Amino acid sequence: MTSNHVAGLLFSLAAIVVTAWLFGAIARKLGQPAVIGEIAGGILMGPTLFGGAISNFLFPTDIRPILGMLAGVGVAIFMFLVGVETEPGAVKEQGGTTLAVSLTSVILPFGLGICLALYLLPRHPTHSRVGFILMIGIVMSVTAFPVLARILADRDMIRTQVGRLAVACAAIADLIAWSLLAVAVALMGINRTEWRILLLVPYIAVMIWVVRPLLKRVAKSHAASGELTVQTLAATLTGLLASAGFTEWIGLHYIFGAFLFGIAMPRDNAADLLSELQDKMGKFCSVLLLPAFFIVAGFTVNLSAIKGAALGQLGLILLVAIGGKFGTFFAARAAHLSNRDAGALAALSNTRGLTELIILTLGLKLGVFDTSLYSMLVLMAVVTTAMTCPILQLIYPARFIKEDAQDASVEDDAQDVGDREDVELPQASRGRMPEVFLRLSGQSR
Image (cartoon, rainbow, N blue to C red):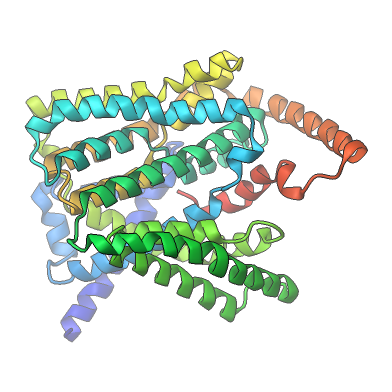
């Protein structure tokens, strides 16, 4: 790498930071999550605007591979933080309502997505027909859990009954969606080393019986010191990168290794550690590495090419994406939730954000999507995420939030009294999840 390359890379990173900050600030001014503006900024830096003249000037082609590598590291850290925020015990700790709503928010859009895929398949060349059908179903069914948590925290809904239910449902839906994606990638057998996928079973066993106990020791060490030491941060980063690298090597993509390492992080008596990791790692990732991912993703998005028949396909994609997720409303109503709460759950489940963009980029990399379909699906992710806040403001205005939060607090107090009179429950079983997500959603996307 020459000095010109180094200078070009540094100037490009500076432009990325400024672009993300500027467009994120505009999005927040408009009442949207910052990620909406950052994704829009990445798209506008690509061929959509002026035929790519801006990106060609700011991001020369000889440094783009380096930006892609930095973006990959950012996505790995982000997926680790998503794993940290995901509560593995959500299914056990929540009731039938949560499970029913969660399954509906995944199964219905997944089924509609398969039907959509059968329509789109003859119109878009693909590396794998089976992979194409499965990926479209997953793209339609995913919910951006971190964005959802951020919206709930921003609107002070995290302590309401519907907020807690949305968090639990999103956690379950996320686990299902990522599991389906892992199956889809494994079935495609992308890298011709299919035997390596068999190592997934011992890998999971090592994560459960070796890595998790070691991480508990790390958490105890943190609790004893009272601060996030260099050793603790280094151990976490080493495990995260090694786990991500291993799943990439076996052909399952690095996002799964990073996500599973986050899932393996201890939950009991480790809230401070998780919060500090989110703060230290999340801020750097949010300011530099993830914006690099938005820019790299924007290089292949060309919204100016969506015209004619493609507009009809885009309309159908939006119809399926929105309609499938708003089927959550009927599941919530069947579980005897009010129209307002059911509508809020449906709107929140329609949030996609960066999680969707990661899956779409994976599909493009694997040759499942062509650039035309990829562009339309990215636009769908932006539109459906941008819809969430205005719809919530309409059906769940601020005047109801304080009242519902107080009602939920009274119910918690009554539950705590009942717990003390009967048997002391583990801390993780008594409303712990909203507290954790309130702390962890500060930099979430």
